[in-house]
Length: 146
Image (cartoon, rainbow, N blue to C red; front, side, top):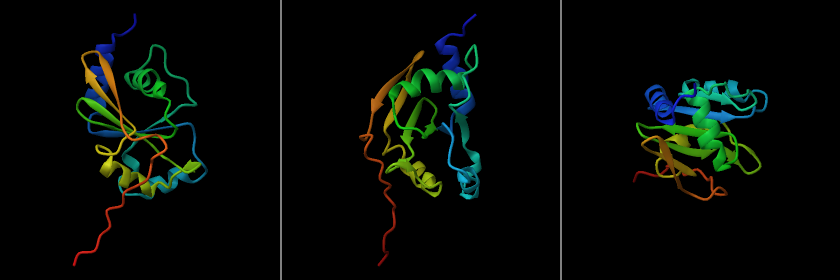
């Protein structure tokens, strides 16, 4: 018996609220080692798209494969899960994946600078587009205190 969308969303948000997820299809050698050296780098859940979704789908599989991937954003993706929404930003810088040290900067600004936000509305997620997919600049908040 298939689980309802409402139940899958309930389970997903109960498990992953206040967490981050990296959705990828593999990385260059050494990327994850470098990620783990970054502050908070080991705290991201990781979903490898090369591994088939479970049948029936887990809440994570259902959200990633049925809600996030249809947005057709470049992969890898960073997802920040809040209590009732997901903020999504791709990690591509130029023609390749950005450096793992950039993820923390992206997370700091993800609620203002995202490519998509999925807001829970009952048993579904409503899509709100954010910045253009081609815009993935990082706003470093360096400044001089005088």
